[in-house]
Image (cartoon, rainbow, N blue to C red; front, side, top):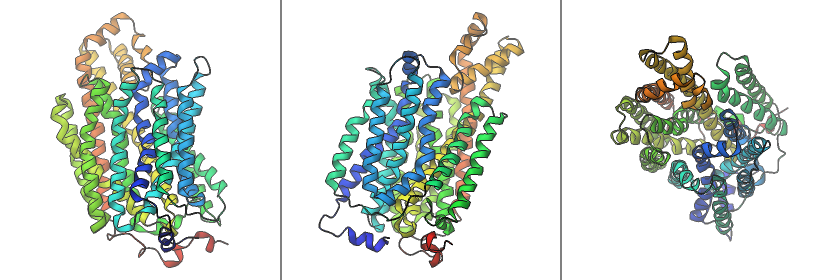
Length: 541
C-alpha cells in the first residue's frame, strides 16, 4: 500500500517524470475521447446513407459508446490503481485506437449495424480505461500546490477539443466518413510516444480486483443509462423505460451494500464521508446536466433555427469554449490559492446567469448577438469543472487517484445521460406543441397537424426517422415546407425551455456549492475520521 508521502518519494528517483511531457501525453491520449463525442454526429447522414442504416439503428451506434463509458468508468479507475495508471493509459489507448480503426473498416451489408455497435462499445471501454488513468497520472506527477493549474490546463484544452470535433468531422467527411475514426491513429501514436518519453512511474496496489462489484456497477449503470437514453424513443410511459431505470438503480443500491461488506471493494465508499467530496460530486452532477447536453442542443439549434452549416454550428460552439478555456485557467489559480469553494460558487452563479440570458436571446435568431451569453455560460462551467474534479481527487483515500477519478467521471457521464434524456423529452414535447399550433394556423386539420408535428419534432431532435415526414402525402409535405420559417422559430422557442432548464441546474449547483466546507484539499483530511481513511478491508469482517 502506498501513501501520498511514499508516492512523492517515488518521484524523486533517478528517472524523475517530466511534468510537461506527462501532461502533454495525457492530453493527447484523452483528446481522442473528447473529439469522438461530437465528431460522429457530423458524419451520421453519410454513414446512414452509405450503409443503409435507419435513424433508430444509428442511435444505437451512438448509445453503445455512451453505455460502455457509463458501465466501465469505475472499473477503469480501479484498474489504474491496481495495475498502475501508466499501464492502463497504454492499454486504454490501444483498445480505443484499434476499435476506431475497425469502426472505420465496417463492411457494407446486413452485418454493418452489429459491427458498428460492437466496436463503438469497445471504443467506449477504451475511453473508460483511458480517462481515469490519464487523470491519475497528472494528479500523481504534479504536487498539490500546482495541481489546480495543471488540471485546469488539462480540462481546458481537452474540453475545448470537443468543439473541434464538428469542424474536423466536416472536413474529413469531405474525403470519407471513415476518416473520422482513422484520425485517431496519429493522435494515439503521438500520445504513446510522449508517454514513453515522460518516464512516468507506476504506483501499483497488491490487491485483488472486485469482480462482483465491477459486474454489479456495470449492470446498474448500463441499465439505468439505457433507460434514460431510450426514454425519448420508448416514451416515459413505457414499462421498459422504467424497468431499465428503476432496475438499474436497484442494482446500484445492491452494489453499494455489497461494497460496504467486501474486503477489497471496487469503490472505497468511505470517501463519501468527506462532505467536501460529496459537494464536489453534486456540483459536478448539476453542472454536467448542462455542459455535455449543450453540445447537442446548441448544434442542432444553430443548424435548424439559424440555418447554419455543420461547420458554422461548430464555430457557434466556439463562443462557449472561449469563455470555458479562460475561466478554467482562472479557476485553477483560485483553487490553488483559496480552495474549491469560491470557484464553485462563482462558476454556478456565472453559469446560471449565462444560460438564462442566452435562453432569452435564442428567438432573436442571430448567431453573432448571442456570443457574450454563450461565452458567459461556458465560463461558468469552466470555473466549476476542473476545480471540482481536482478537489475531489485530492481527497482520495490512500492516494487512490484512479479510483476517485473513476467515481467523478461516472458522476459526470451519468449526469450527461440524464440531462440528454430530460432535456430531449422537454424539447420534443415543446416543439410538438409549437409546430402543432403553427400547422393548424396554416389550415391543416387538427388530427393531421398533431401527427405531423410529432413527426417533425422527432425528425429534428433525432428520435425519429426522416421518412415519417412524407407519410402524410404531398399536401402535408407542402404545408410543412411552406411553414419552415415559423417552424424554425418554434424550435428556437422550444430550446428556450431547455436552456432555462440548464440555468436551473446551475442554480441548484450553487445551493450545493455553498455547503462546501472550504479550505484547500491535500494530505490533511478533517472531515473523515482517521479510521475511515484506511481501506475498508481493515474493518471488514
